[in-house]
Image 1 (spheres, one colour):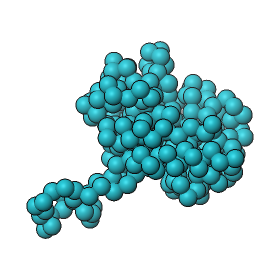
Image 2: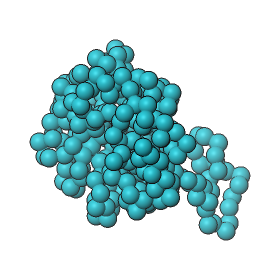
Image 3: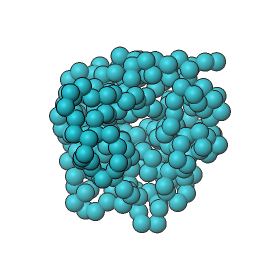
Image 4: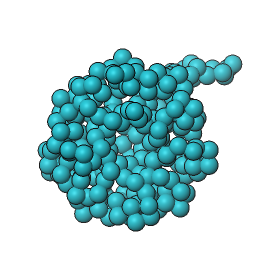
Amino acid sequence: MISLEVCANSITSALAAQDGGAFRVELCDNLKEGGTTPSAGQILMARKLLHIKLYVLIRPRSGDFLYSDIEFEVMKANVQYCIETGCDGVVLGMLNTDGSIDKERCAELINLAKNAGLGVTFHRAIDVCADQFKALEEIIELGCERILTSGGKSTAMEGSAVIAHLVEKAAGRIIIMPGSGVDEKNVTDLVHFTGVNEVHSSARKIVESHMKFQNDHIIMGELLHDEYNYDVTDVNRVKDIIALANIK
């Protein structure tokens, strides 16, 4: 059975993932910026309402994965909150200026989580590191249980050859989970080509606003987009991706 982890951008998305049959949720915020740590309220409500596994993204901001001392303190505080809230795991990753894994500070966060019984996924920071195969060995040594990766490319399909090699090199020592652009159209081929047992997708759809009054002369953020719609995980897309991932 190929398991689906849903990258959920809200409690609404997390519940849709659960209803669709997802094995695990990675709860985050700001997916258009690559994902950041969700609010305390989102984490709390997700833990209250989910019976599937709940992992939380530990990423204090968008951009690179080179963090200041104060950002690192924020990350530690967020891991501690996940522990206190009863989450099943955290998703994290940090790099040095040369593109290598920041082993010292990663170890501190990983040990904090694991000593409290939480699992740890190393996220797509591996996709922008200098040497993915060296990083693989270091992440295994650090004690992570899985790596989320697109194979160093924008999408998992583009990086599928690297993902397949990572699976081969890992040799069962760690789970390799492809993510980025995984959907109904490609998940069957991706699974067959790479030999993975878990996949990662947001499975989102666009929801139109029910606002009757709409001011169409304003942009609230920096990017040009429709202020009166938003993305949310779709139950049926979750079901379809799971079914297609498991075609033999």
